[in-house]
Image (tube, rainbow, N blue to C red):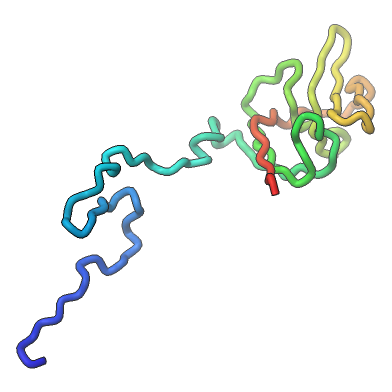
Length: 144
């Protein structure tokens, strides 16, 4: 092996690049034709969060909103900056307890309505300690 040079790979595997910054090449040295149409990955923060400082994640506990498609263990994305309108699903603080319900307001009073017939509507006029925490904008649940 005297006088022979050993050449290693030019790329040593440093983690300073991600997959979108390194162009791919096949054995002939030319990139694949599909590389021109390659899209970057989906960023869930970019897709699901519109106002980062006002957005929070909660884990749903209970079955009060099952008919709305929100199940026990689901992850709720709650935005505190969304304007409250009639029919929105909200996170409310009622006597120190967090509740996820549909908000409904008529001429004289406001209600928190569950999406499960086992639970009763909550008339907000009966409670002094009530705050609307934020509006549920997305629900993420496992299909497995």
